Image (cartoon, rainbow, N blue to C red; front, side, top):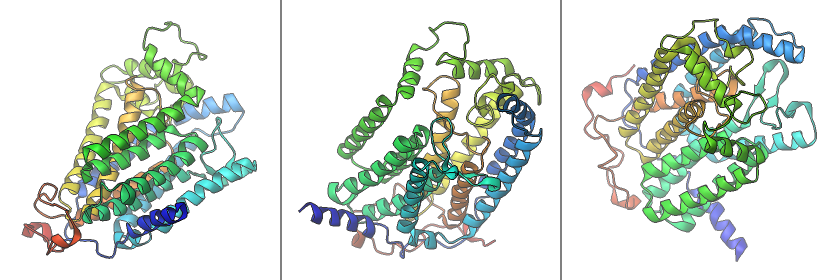
Length: 440
């Protein structure tokens, strides 16, 4: 009986990603504002790395006896920007129907990469050498490194948008056996690989945000919402309680500013205090490019997870407001594109992209100013690093591609999916303006 049920779950997952009938309206001019906001953020990130790269190199050279040049990190970030731009262009022009057709093999390949990384780390292979107690990257020598969790996020985004979208079209979104349990299995397996094995809670929360945003847009009912939220809460609580360093961060956050005012690198609140100090030092207009003190070794991960605080120190309150405004504009364009896509599956893709980017921005910023416990997560397009930037650019390329197929009117409120056969003429573009049909 259990074997039979397992086969039904696998079949449900397989049947839920059929994509030959994706509904695309007439191709028209895409939303170039997505490119503009993405490009500005990437260039600002390059400027920040250029400004603090020499200080970062000096810190590492003194601490580990390495021989990084002053331009090392700038050149690496420039290379990452080029790779990310290529990823954007490729995904923006590669037909999503083809990607959707191979959503399941893509997900399996991503899980296989995560498993290979774990096995390579157990075997103590150089390609998967652990850093700071966690093996999250494949070390590829002169080619840099690759983080398989980013590939898993991308494949989850594609696979689950199709799976949940088809279940919505069939009127089965709230079906426990057909939808909720298979979804829980995929999510649970992802959490095991990312949060437990790779010790990466930040990425796990980002994946949770992707799925939660899809379910919210798909209009899951209240009962199942409570079930899903309870399951997520229990799972995340368990992985926090079972990891001492995460509990320490929670306790540090709960204590707030009522701790000793002296700053000692052995204190759990050291990172957050230094981030706040950097932002406070920047004042209104900042200390200027190349004048950051916190980047000289006081603020941990200044070039990666803590880049928001360094921007505050360098460019001041004005710089932080500018960064937040750019992200707000970008996220608004993603929501507008989602609102005007006719196919529910494509709307879920856009919802997942929004959830991905928004989770990174909100978690990174909130942790730097002490609103949430410290979580190691990058600030999209600004933090130093190749894999994260490449996949963020890739999903924005996907958003740019789908923006070619929007309709003039909103499709969210007017579309109802009780069952697949009740919606005739589903392939027609409704109320589309002539201007929206212009070709490139």
